[in-house]
Image 1 (cartoon, rainbow over the protein chains, first blue to last red):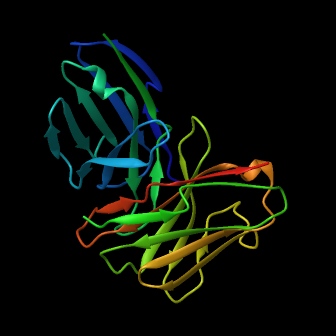
Image 2: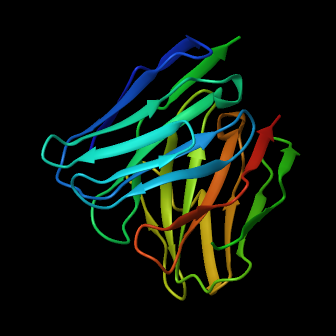
Length: 111
Length: 115
């Protein structure tokens, strides 16, 4: 059974600071996704990582994937309040199959 | 990307009644749709995979007789919560796989409250 673990689950940080969210998974996969969820809302797709060594950046967020280590990271640079949300990673075992989600990281960026 | 809608966005019902939630892929023919459930402050849990023209595939622990799924067309899947109870209160989200590898588009979700 595929297990996906995120760390930390709760993150409170100050504006302007940098931090990294980690996503570990238990079986072989080269398809990993990052989503953002605002309170009461559905998921917003942030990144799709489809190969070992994949790195993608959008604004203050950068995601990477190391399939050998079964690890993905979501790095936040110079955080701003608007980034406050819950971030989920999700792993797809085989192409077109269902996603298994991590527990989510609730990020709060304080002024 | 694909536009996915859900209806209703919010529903409150009495215990024992049945509730139908619709998931529509507005601009894409989806042979497969996924139904997730999310309890407050928790992650998304896959309930079932909805396949057009065939029976849905349910995850372990999800009662297929309680959560009826119908995927009658390439643009519509429905989830019916039968004889709803307060413990079924949750946020239900559907998703549609896109044309490109790795694409998956989520609907806006339906918040169900069972009194």
